[in-house]
Image (cartoon, rainbow, N blue to C red; front, side, top):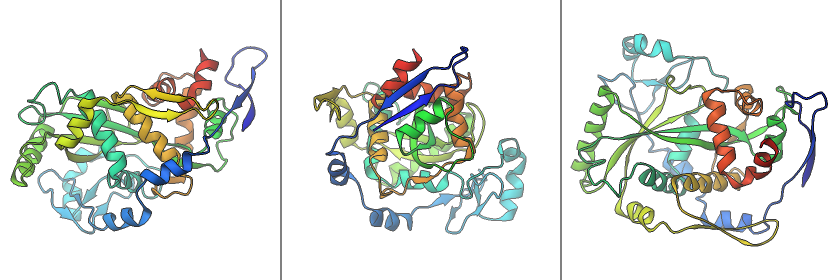
Amino acid sequence: MSVLITDTNDSSATPRVVVVHHATHPGRDNQFHATAVSSAFLKEKQKIFCVKCTQPECQASLEKPLKCAKCKSVWYCSKECQKKHWPTHKPRCYEVERSSGAFKFIRMFILNPTLMTLLKVGIVIDCNLNDNPRIGFDVPFGVRVDIAIEPSHVLDFVELYFNNKSSGEKLQGMVQVNAMTPWELTPERVNKWRQARARHDAEGLAKDPVGLVDFVDVNCTKNSGNALTLEVHFPSIVLDFAKSREPFLGVSAVTGAEIRKPMSSMTCLETLNMHIRADKGNQLLLRTEMTDLDKEVICAAGRNEDTYLARILKEKIQREHIYGGIVQLTR
């Protein structure tokens, strides 16, 4: 499939006209169905997914959480806890376009063992868990995972990037991981990590490293916003898989040649992103209509704006194979 695009981001008198070709390997659907979990599995697991009250002094497990009506990114057990937490939450609270916020998609991502295994392996490599046996045991650590919604068809992505799509045009989107970054924990979050470490020890997981993983979406900037924090333990099977550094194997849709990508934290992200992309029928429950903010992040990257969200998207474009044509055009 190909599309003719006028690069309206080009500042020259005569904008470039480019033709973008995109091919899908005929065996992609079979490969996806061989490794993907079912929607029924995810919906069943959803019933046991539990969040805790955001008020730090409470942390009660919530069956029917009260969600912030504005940002839809924090949850409380009562109006009393919400009022108590408001002075802390207020600077981070922003109106969002999506009625459910990012929670629904982050939850489905977390419940998916295929995606979480790839993410955990990437974290093990990026945070050197196999090289430093103290990390996750007596040395706390945390990771920020930036998720975004981008068009489920790469040609729609290209048109947004080159400013060929109207912001009001409806587009089907899908979850993607744009960045994964180790970051220093605040004293409050170090305490949260120690509580998580103690809980996992009590559950018989004392031999597994434990870390905090913060999932954030496009409503957050580099240093502000709300996150869904997950306590993650790394079993030996994940540590061993990361240590093996077996390459990821693929096949070129154009030439049919085998593609071997060395295992790294970034190729782990690319592999999980491609797994989500291959889900044409929304089996993984990670597809939704794009909001104007979702689209603007891509447009800003195309305009080469120096914002955090635009930068991490451009870095993703540089490292992931599917965007190769864009990389060549923007060099």
